[in-house]
Image 1 (cartoon, rainbow, N blue to C red):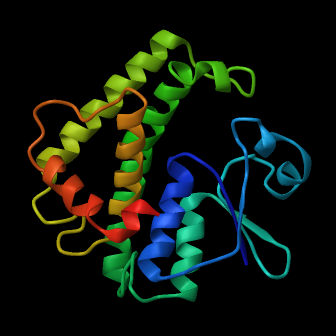
Image 2: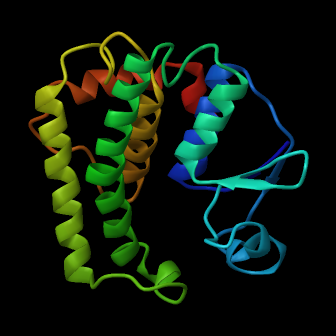
Image 3: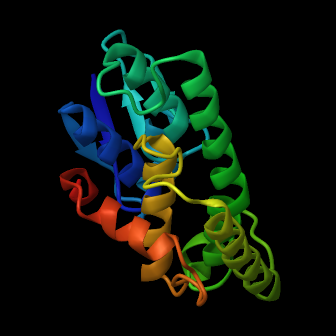
Length: 203
């Protein structure tokens, strides 16, 4: 297999999941700043143009970070980042979807419409700058909502899962692009320090 990597939070999620499982793969870095993911051989392999992507030995390509993580979990079930039982897997997938739709999407689209506008506006439709600011506010409110619900060491209590990886990678990216953690959080700052201390966080 081969990993098509790049900068950004999405590839970070897959690299971190791989590091947790001790998986190493041949890697090719795609220059998304130059638009290499939107043309040439890559767009043929990944029509949506997103990174990362996983090329299988038979030439087929898997894209979308949660799909890649699920595939790697099936090949390498230990340590479990999704779960060992149907109940654990359901819990992880529930939080992954809540975090992805409720926080990651508005945070990322808010960035694309504001600080990231010069890069993204020529490439695909984005919302207005004012809508981008509203999306950032929605993402911050979702973090406050999530913070009030959490009580354990990790999103799924005592289990470190894909939900933690997804949330961590996007929070780190947000902090780097003008969307720091909002004030008034109680659980998230200590959680972030726990996750940041894991060797995989540097992947």
